[in-house]
Length: 462
Image (tube, rainbow, N blue to C red; front, side, top):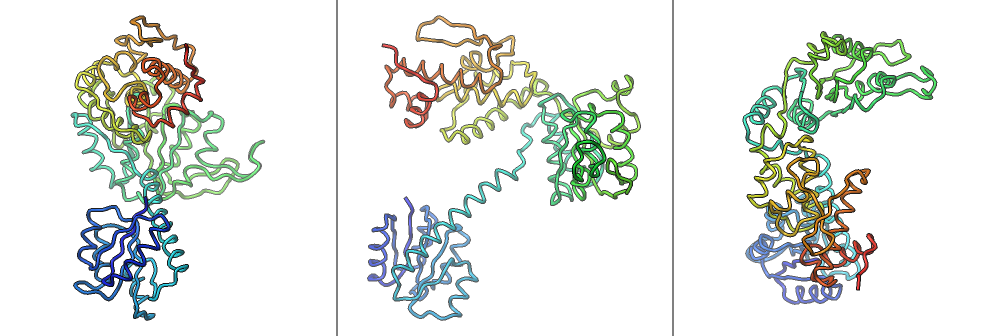
């Protein structure tokens, strides 16, 4: 329920405001002085404050100023001695609006509604910005990760080109993001290009752009990634999969800081810092004639190797715990505890998919396990690709286990839906289809469980 705090030294005013606001279904707290109001702001979640200006003990303007350091709660200032100067001063100090006594009921309610809507929008905007802009931490304290963090701190402020190597899913992109985040170019864009995902005949157009009519499908001019990244950072992921012709043009761009669009003649100057990444051994690719040695030396001013998850098993507990908090937050469920034995079980796995595989596994365990994730559940559900995993699913409460045929699932989402359906069906059968008890046991809302039952077409078998 929305909570409104009234700070006014006149009891009749507080009583009138309380009656009006409670009639509109707001929860109302009131005090007769500023210091008490500030104490409430420190202890309670307040959505809006109505504050008188002329009060004993502490002036309303002083309350407003002090409150800004406690919480970003919208203030509506009220006074029986209103002037334009007072209203301007209130706005300057951060008040949402200023109302004169005697208060007009309609204006009061409209102002309260608008202030609450603005407060909600401000909070939502901050959350969204945090989600969008936040670069995830590089988790771990192993020797390899500590060296990477130290290298980033030293290299990021420079414009030196960096080549990041490591297995798929090990976190090369995260290293590139932090190099950009801590650089002097952080206010400019970070443009990413997955060289392996772009057909060789289109990679040059993607990187350098093209002019209208330069080839059959070029119906309009296109700005390439180098131009888009001008002033910022260009991240060339999977650079080892780039065609030799594109490599030659990238080399020229790095040498001269100039590019030419496909089908164009004009040279365009670009100021770009290039960070490249690959899961291939580029020296072997050079020997095989698949990669240019001169480009390799241009890109590898600084070399950063990201170790595989298997090489830093000691970091798995902190990474797994972080993923657990994050995913439970996304699902809006209480954070599940991962037992010590479960962590040891995870550390014993080969992790061929590295960090990406670990995150998928944690998500799977959160869906399939109870309030605690134990080593039994890790071995049962966690890692179907692992030789150590005896993954099976139980169709009923007996000890009979049926091996899952993973070939039947075209995507991880298909497997996740299957596992979720089987798990919910098992729990419902176990609890005699008591939906309330089952929802509480698996840690979701009852309405959410009803939705799942309908989604999967689950029915009680008599």
